[in-house]
Image (cartoon, rainbow, N blue to C red; front, side, top):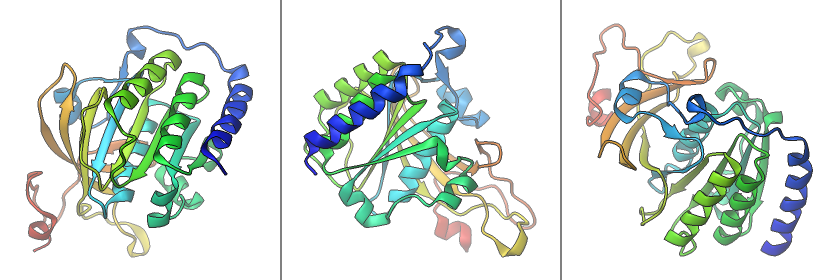
Length: 258
Protein backbone atom coordinates (compact mmCIF):
# COMPACT_ATOMS: atom_id res chain seq x y z
CA UNK A 1 0.00 0.00 0.00
CA UNK A 2 1.44 3.42 -0.96
CA UNK A 3 2.15 6.03 1.70
CA UNK A 4 -0.38 8.44 0.16
CA UNK A 5 -3.18 5.85 0.43
CA UNK A 6 -2.22 5.05 4.03
CA UNK A 7 -2.30 8.70 5.01
CA UNK A 8 -5.60 9.37 3.25
CA UNK A 9 -7.27 6.43 5.02
CA UNK A 10 -5.95 7.65 8.35
CA UNK A 11 -7.31 11.14 7.69
CA UNK A 12 -10.74 9.66 7.01
CA UNK A 13 -10.63 7.65 10.26
CA UNK A 14 -9.49 10.66 12.25
CA UNK A 15 -12.22 12.89 10.83
CA UNK A 16 -14.81 10.41 12.12
CA UNK A 17 -13.05 9.93 15.43
CA UNK A 18 -12.58 13.61 16.04
CA UNK A 19 -16.13 14.58 15.14
CA UNK A 20 -17.32 14.06 18.70
CA UNK A 21 -14.13 15.17 20.43
CA UNK A 22 -14.58 17.95 22.92
CA UNK A 23 -12.62 21.17 22.89
CA UNK A 24 -9.67 21.03 25.21
CA UNK A 25 -9.85 23.43 28.14
CA UNK A 26 -6.69 25.42 28.51
CA UNK A 27 -5.38 26.72 31.79
CA UNK A 28 -2.53 26.47 34.25
CA UNK A 29 -3.48 22.95 35.27
CA UNK A 30 -3.19 21.86 31.61
CA UNK A 31 0.15 23.50 30.86
CA UNK A 32 2.11 20.31 31.30
CA UNK A 33 2.53 16.90 32.88
CA UNK A 34 4.96 15.31 35.30
CA UNK A 35 6.73 11.99 34.96
CA UNK A 36 5.68 11.14 38.50
CA UNK A 37 9.01 10.45 40.20
CA UNK A 38 9.67 13.29 42.69
CA UNK A 39 13.45 13.51 42.22
CA UNK A 40 13.02 13.91 38.45
CA UNK A 41 9.96 16.16 38.58
CA UNK A 42 11.62 18.55 41.03
CA UNK A 43 14.60 18.98 38.73
CA UNK A 44 12.93 18.91 35.32
CA UNK A 45 9.54 20.47 36.09
CA UNK A 46 6.55 20.25 33.77
CA UNK A 47 6.78 18.73 30.30
CA UNK A 48 4.63 20.29 27.61
CA UNK A 49 1.27 18.85 26.63
CA UNK A 50 1.35 20.63 23.27
CA UNK A 51 4.89 19.67 22.32
CA UNK A 52 7.14 16.96 20.89
CA UNK A 53 9.35 14.83 23.13
CA UNK A 54 12.13 12.59 21.77
CA UNK A 55 13.35 9.35 23.36
CA UNK A 56 16.52 7.70 22.04
CA UNK A 57 17.91 4.23 22.73
CA UNK A 58 20.57 1.94 21.32
CA UNK A 59 19.76 -0.28 18.34
CA UNK A 60 19.08 -3.29 20.57
CA UNK A 61 16.83 -1.43 23.02
CA UNK A 62 13.82 -0.73 20.77
CA UNK A 63 11.36 -1.99 23.38
CA UNK A 64 13.01 0.12 26.06
CA UNK A 65 12.43 3.28 24.01
CA UNK A 66 8.86 2.19 23.25
CA UNK A 67 8.15 1.45 26.91
CA UNK A 68 9.41 4.82 28.06
CA UNK A 69 7.41 6.60 25.35
CA UNK A 70 4.26 4.70 26.30
CA UNK A 71 4.78 5.40 30.00
CA UNK A 72 5.24 9.13 29.36
CA UNK A 73 2.19 9.18 27.08
CA UNK A 74 0.12 7.56 29.82
CA UNK A 75 1.37 10.15 32.29
CA UNK A 76 0.38 12.93 29.89
CA UNK A 77 -3.11 11.62 29.07
CA UNK A 78 -5.58 8.88 29.95
CA UNK A 79 -6.05 8.07 26.29
CA UNK A 80 -7.13 6.90 23.80
CA UNK A 81 -3.71 6.82 22.14
CA UNK A 82 -2.43 6.47 18.62
CA UNK A 83 0.76 4.42 18.31
CA UNK A 84 2.32 4.42 14.85
CA UNK A 85 5.23 2.16 13.89
CA UNK A 86 7.52 2.20 10.93
CA UNK A 87 7.39 -1.14 9.16
CA UNK A 88 11.01 -2.15 9.56
CA UNK A 89 10.84 -1.44 13.30
CA UNK A 90 8.15 -4.13 13.53
CA UNK A 91 10.53 -6.52 11.81
CA UNK A 92 12.87 -6.12 14.76
CA UNK A 93 10.38 -6.59 17.62
CA UNK A 94 6.90 -7.48 16.36
CA UNK A 95 3.69 -5.74 17.39
CA UNK A 96 2.50 -4.96 20.95
CA UNK A 97 0.87 -7.86 22.79
CA UNK A 98 -2.58 -7.28 24.34
CA UNK A 99 -1.99 -8.93 27.76
CA UNK A 100 1.36 -7.18 27.93
CA UNK A 101 -0.33 -3.81 27.40
CA UNK A 102 -2.80 -4.63 30.17
CA UNK A 103 0.11 -5.44 32.46
CA UNK A 104 1.53 -2.06 31.55
CA UNK A 105 -1.73 -0.48 32.73
CA UNK A 106 -3.32 0.21 29.34
CA UNK A 107 -6.42 -1.42 27.92
CA UNK A 108 -5.84 -2.44 24.28
CA UNK A 109 -9.22 -0.92 23.37
CA UNK A 110 -7.73 2.47 24.21
CA UNK A 111 -5.02 2.09 21.58
CA UNK A 112 -5.08 2.50 17.81
CA UNK A 113 -2.08 0.89 16.09
CA UNK A 114 -0.91 2.11 12.69
CA UNK A 115 1.88 0.57 10.60
CA UNK A 116 3.56 3.02 8.25
CA UNK A 117 5.54 1.84 5.25
CA UNK A 118 8.31 4.43 5.63
CA UNK A 119 9.68 7.11 7.94
CA UNK A 120 8.10 9.76 5.71
CA UNK A 121 4.68 8.12 6.06
CA UNK A 122 5.23 7.74 9.81
CA UNK A 123 5.82 11.47 10.24
CA UNK A 124 2.79 12.31 8.07
CA UNK A 125 0.61 9.99 10.18
CA UNK A 126 1.88 11.75 13.30
CA UNK A 127 1.04 15.18 11.91
CA UNK A 128 -2.49 14.21 10.95
CA UNK A 129 -3.17 12.47 14.26
CA UNK A 130 -1.87 15.38 16.33
CA UNK A 131 -3.71 18.01 14.35
CA UNK A 132 -7.00 16.10 14.63
CA UNK A 133 -7.02 16.29 18.43
CA UNK A 134 -8.72 12.88 18.42
CA UNK A 135 -6.16 11.22 20.69
CA UNK A 136 -4.84 11.95 24.12
CA UNK A 137 -1.28 11.41 22.90
CA UNK A 138 0.56 10.23 19.80
CA UNK A 139 3.55 7.85 19.83
CA UNK A 140 5.80 7.40 16.80
CA UNK A 141 8.25 4.47 16.87
CA UNK A 142 11.16 4.14 14.48
CA UNK A 143 14.34 2.08 14.17
CA UNK A 144 17.59 3.15 12.56
CA UNK A 145 18.74 6.33 10.83
CA UNK A 146 16.40 8.10 8.41
CA UNK A 147 16.95 11.30 6.42
CA UNK A 148 13.23 12.09 6.87
CA UNK A 149 13.82 13.11 10.51
CA UNK A 150 14.88 16.69 9.78
CA UNK A 151 14.59 19.94 11.69
CA UNK A 152 11.77 20.93 9.35
CA UNK A 153 9.90 17.68 10.04
CA UNK A 154 10.18 18.23 13.79
CA UNK A 155 8.88 21.77 13.44
CA UNK A 156 5.88 20.49 11.50
CA UNK A 157 5.15 17.95 14.24
CA UNK A 158 5.54 20.59 16.92
CA UNK A 159 3.11 22.88 15.10
CA UNK A 160 0.60 20.03 14.74
CA UNK A 161 0.93 19.26 18.46
CA UNK A 162 0.24 22.90 19.28
CA UNK A 163 -2.76 23.06 16.93
CA UNK A 164 -4.30 19.85 18.27
CA UNK A 165 -3.37 20.47 21.91
CA UNK A 166 -1.81 17.01 22.22
CA UNK A 167 1.74 15.75 22.92
CA UNK A 168 3.85 13.57 20.65
CA UNK A 169 6.47 11.07 21.84
CA UNK A 170 9.02 9.95 19.26
CA UNK A 171 10.82 6.72 20.15
CA UNK A 172 13.96 6.23 18.06
CA UNK A 173 16.30 3.27 18.50
CA UNK A 174 19.61 2.93 16.69
CA UNK A 175 19.71 6.59 15.67
CA UNK A 176 21.75 9.62 16.67
CA UNK A 177 20.04 12.80 17.89
CA UNK A 178 19.76 15.59 15.35
CA UNK A 179 18.77 19.22 15.52
CA UNK A 180 15.02 19.37 16.19
CA UNK A 181 12.23 21.49 17.62
CA UNK A 182 11.40 18.91 20.31
CA UNK A 183 10.81 20.41 23.74
CA UNK A 184 12.70 17.60 25.48
CA UNK A 185 15.17 14.92 24.46
CA UNK A 186 15.97 11.79 26.47
CA UNK A 187 18.19 8.73 26.26
CA UNK A 188 16.96 5.51 27.84
CA UNK A 189 18.46 2.10 28.54
CA UNK A 190 17.31 -0.96 30.49
CA UNK A 191 18.58 -1.76 33.96
CA UNK A 192 17.95 -4.32 36.69
CA UNK A 193 14.67 -4.13 38.54
CA UNK A 194 14.78 -3.90 42.32
CA UNK A 195 14.27 -7.00 44.46
CA UNK A 196 10.54 -7.36 45.05
CA UNK A 197 8.60 -10.35 46.39
CA UNK A 198 6.44 -10.98 43.33
CA UNK A 199 4.42 -14.18 43.07
CA UNK A 200 5.41 -17.25 41.04
CA UNK A 201 8.97 -15.98 40.66
CA UNK A 202 7.83 -13.29 38.23
CA UNK A 203 10.35 -10.59 37.30
CA UNK A 204 10.24 -7.22 39.01
CA UNK A 205 8.86 -4.00 37.59
CA UNK A 206 10.26 -2.75 34.25
CA UNK A 207 13.35 -0.70 35.12
CA UNK A 208 15.02 2.09 33.17
CA UNK A 209 18.00 4.37 33.31
CA UNK A 210 16.77 7.69 31.92
CA UNK A 211 19.07 10.50 30.93
CA UNK A 212 17.89 14.02 30.08
CA UNK A 213 19.88 15.29 27.10
CA UNK A 214 18.05 18.57 26.55
CA UNK A 215 14.96 20.49 27.64
CA UNK A 216 13.94 23.92 26.43
CA UNK A 217 14.10 26.43 29.27
CA UNK A 218 15.07 23.65 31.67
CA UNK A 219 18.04 21.89 33.26
CA UNK A 220 20.95 20.97 31.03
CA UNK A 221 21.17 17.30 32.00
CA UNK A 222 20.42 14.66 34.60
CA UNK A 223 20.19 10.88 35.14
CA UNK A 224 17.67 8.78 37.04
CA UNK A 225 16.98 5.11 37.73
CA UNK A 226 13.24 4.39 37.72
CA UNK A 227 10.66 1.64 37.45
CA UNK A 228 7.23 1.63 35.84
CA UNK A 229 4.31 0.74 38.12
CA UNK A 230 1.50 -0.29 35.76
CA UNK A 231 -1.13 -0.46 38.49
CA UNK A 232 -0.63 3.18 39.41
CA UNK A 233 0.47 4.25 35.92
CA UNK A 234 3.47 6.06 37.33
CA UNK A 235 7.28 5.96 37.33
CA UNK A 236 8.65 5.21 40.78
CA UNK A 237 11.96 5.16 42.61
CA UNK A 238 13.20 1.56 42.91
CA UNK A 239 12.57 0.02 46.33
CA UNK A 240 15.67 -1.72 47.64
CA UNK A 241 15.44 -4.44 50.26
CA UNK A 242 17.52 -7.13 51.95
CA UNK A 243 21.19 -6.96 51.12
CA UNK A 244 20.69 -4.58 48.20
CA UNK A 245 21.77 -0.97 48.53
CA UNK A 246 20.86 2.08 46.50
CA UNK A 247 23.08 2.54 43.44
CA UNK A 248 23.80 5.81 41.58
CA UNK A 249 22.43 6.10 38.07
CA UNK A 250 25.88 6.05 36.49
CA UNK A 251 26.71 2.54 37.75
CA UNK A 252 26.28 -0.23 35.20
CA UNK A 253 23.84 -3.12 35.53
CA UNK A 254 26.79 -5.51 35.47
CA UNK A 255 28.32 -3.86 38.54
CA UNK A 256 24.98 -3.93 40.36
CA UNK A 257 24.54 -7.63 39.60
CA UNK A 258 27.98 -8.53 40.97
